[in-house]
Image 1 (cartoon, rainbow, N blue to C red):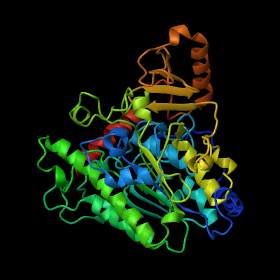
Image 2: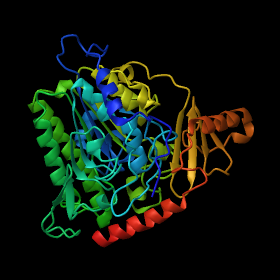
Image 3: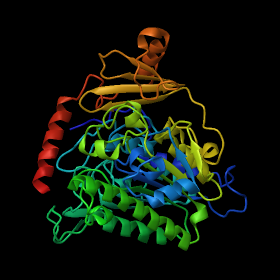
Length: 481
């Protein structure tokens, strides 16, 4: 059905795990005190589709997010944090692999029948595998979307000790699903028929599993990838709460309630860390997997004004509005409180960041495109780099690069390069390509060198096999929902 065509990381899995284990080098990183007995816990809460414009700390006035606002006040809020790319599977794959989407084995939402997505290859080195030699317990709860349970992309084959939630992101469109997965076991939800009446709200079970697992880690350093489905997919909620009487559509009320539910569950998690007295020993980063999700004139976009940051574009594009997402870091005593940072960073930076905090070297097999953010997170400067790069393989492959304050976009392999000066034009309104051919030439050079050829992700467009696979996958899903 598909080929594993990446040239990265072709070390046999057993040998690679031996290499990973041998790379544990202790805990004496600059950001950690000599007196600390273990490296910090790391929680990455990835909200599916939450945008800067959805949160009070970024200016939202209609949706209440008191815990996220408090997290921003107690930590650092980022204005130019970039996702891996602007749809689900490749964005989270960029995070777990530390690769931008010119190198990442997943570069689009490639649906596979009867359930699941294009799998991470067996030779992939994930953030979970990097952390395990340092003694970390690892878990993913929420939505996986990087390979079904009988494939090489199974989370339990990619360094995670525990998984609970939706394996398949198509199934995650329903918040009242017929089943979820606990590790490799399908958990049927009695009474759930894909509808709201009398059904179990999936987020209830996911949150319960998160809290239960964290409680079990009192004596272990842990890495939690909390891949929350809120507020993506169908805008379904079991309780409209404070929005029930708003003069809005049901979808708008539900969306606002989903955001506030996400905020509530984050608050519960932070409260648990405090109860366990590990709050000051835990770095939490929350973000969305893309920027704005809705067009400005859409039902959601017009009411909630996701584009209130003045940025152009939204999900499935590569303009700044699609790539910059809500991002907040909190680690009491380490991450500065009340800081608002404008320096850019990207998802692929989080793997080397976690490695430095854990006191392990990033294995050469990772071939990571990222830079450690430890100095930046703790109040210093962001790492210098030559460029950021994105590509996305949806209806047609598109590419973008940021080098300095220049941003280049090519909306198709045969399209002209657009060029913007982000220092003067963050909204990408004025194409400067005709006036700066030397910068266009630099962009084309980046597009060429940053894109590794892969048989599954040709810049010419979707393969026939992928088109057939996706049609069959969605047909199978519709029959189950």
